[in-house]
Length: 131
Image (cartoon, rainbow, N blue to C red):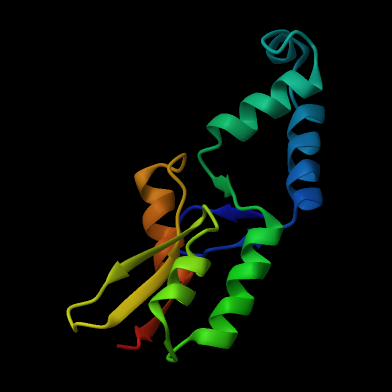
């Protein structure tokens, strides 16, 4: 899934993103296409790496996160269960001021600061660790 940067937080599928790139390619002048060796795949790879409008979030990660949020949001879990949740490389946690309250959120070291903040804000939930 591709997530737009900015206030609207528009999510689009991989197919919709590919269609946006194809449309951009088809509307590009021949002169501009030479920059990409007249190769759509070179253009696509560069767009995916340096896109200023969207960032990529794997569909399976989002699905897994949403399932965890449904199951554990506001719940009390063991510290072992928390460690199990955090085995997913996209899932992070931070301790909230109260001693046993944690926020679980999505993050990835490859995202820039804007994308990271947006993702953390949109996809997070709180839970409590039992003692």
